[in-house]
Image (cartoon, rainbow, N blue to C red; front, top):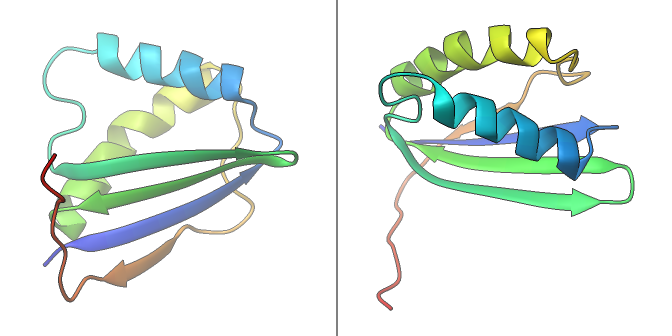
Length: 95
């Protein structure tokens, strides 16, 4: 079952976000396996991240890869656990 994840990251800048993405993309293998879509919204107090994952397992596997990288970069985790919801339905618009 697909999972929608929403994380609020106060204090995280777009520069930190970009650095993290660059580091994750440089890792061997398919770091983002199982991520169906990803959106980052930048605001005045930090960033908001919305991911659609094909499964809970895929999301958890990504977090085990991502967390050591965030720690190495000196980024702290969110003050609260990301919100997660089981997805009833989703579709991708044709371009």
